[in-house]
Image (cartoon, rainbow, N blue to C red; front, side):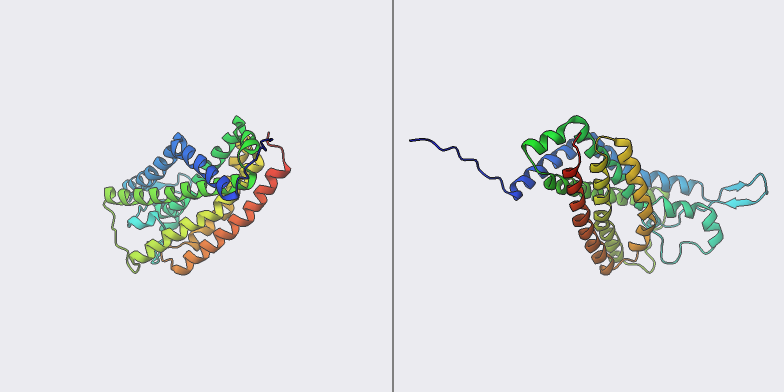
Length: 276
């Protein structure tokens, strides 16, 4: 009697679960991950404290003699977004002073920091030959894209939360007001949820650029940051401080569509191009 050799078919769910275990284990053991989370925590503290120290300082244009008074933040939540009241009554001073800096250097920078993580994370797979070996013996390209997208989303969400914690600490150290004004705690929660779900729009873009560039880290970073900057100005409008459940729903729906659509394209790119 001959013993027949049976090859067990591994289901999509099992392959994806295995891929997720590997990626999340690598992410949580990576120094890069903790460095970026630490940066997300420290950046708002430094910006808030420095801008508060510069509040009231005067700079003079040597050519025209025009004086510009720097205005620091007045409220802790300006690190998260622009207050509905506009933040300051003097619009010209706000445009020339510190408020313009706070308007650009706020929590939305974390979308760009997520690009750094994803590019380096994926690029290392192709540089080390791990990706080629992985696709040969363990996972298919579809599971790889899904796993990298979910890992990038989790990392991006943690960066946003770390920045929020840093903004609160920075406000406390600088003695800024925590008054929400016309806002409520619910608005602030909706704002953060909307930003977290909006990360699902950015992450698939970064994954697509990274799998297309593969081991060319410089190309991954340049491409991701350029595309990200094109969408950067929209983040504040889509996820304002006075966000509602509608903003959260739109970000979640948009994130799901981008993740599916761009994920499909990323899968096709991996199938049609060389892995080296």
